[in-house]
Length: 360
Image 1: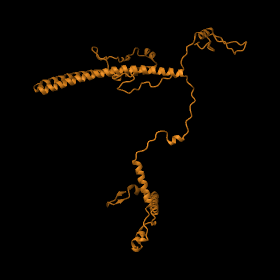
Image 2: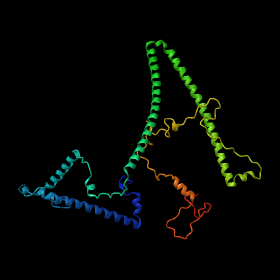
Image 3: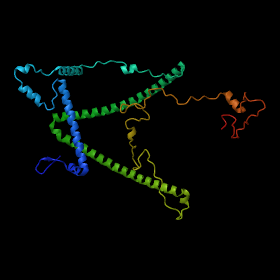
């Protein structure tokens, strides 16, 4: 709906467009039928409600109220009031539901009724395992767990030492700060001296940060240069491979051509400074090395072994000396071979039938 010229509500622009032609007539018919259906459903609901209260189902209800108003005082006893039995039942049902919601639910442990009625799953027919095999696998699993736990204990002790050293450093700094605070409170005349001391410390820190900034800029330039060299080298390698390889370069029409050299690899020590150089910071092993320690307090225990590691293939059995001697003698005699039939040659040089399984 949209506002008209005089401020009254009117049909929207879309409605006015749909009214033009046969589309508008069909649209009005659909709206009219839907409105009639809604009115019909409302009347049915009102009649059902009136029937439940034992009141005459009058469409508009005017005649019923008029009859009650016009009836004399002596006849009021003859007019029966509405039956409240259904209302009482509904209120009682609502109160019982509210009481159940307020009470704490009773928890019952075990399978539910639906699970009890269902059939048990079929059992898997697994082969029997000897007790000795089970005990050996359990022992090997325990040995692995003990070795892992011992490594974890060693690494955790090292980390505990690092944490204790950091704690001691912070405690020393806290004691120094507390002593300076007490000195300032006891002797306010030293305030200027303490301010000069802290100012010198700040200047040293600024100089150190400026030096670190210069070093980081040089490091960034070094990495940028390596990235450019790598890109040029990779493009050159792709074009040489597409043209025919090194043979094409060695027999080029222009003679000896200039090529980009292979970029240098990143060593564990920096290359942008030749003299005093510290090792590069590795963020992957800054707190703990996940390839060495499988449990540390800074990261979740993702590599811990909880179950015995079963091998995917059967264990390898070495050949005995007797089997090796039989293999050296040649092809074993077949007891099921008929008399007079020739056996296959035992030469290892023939590719048709090898002499033994060890002949490769």
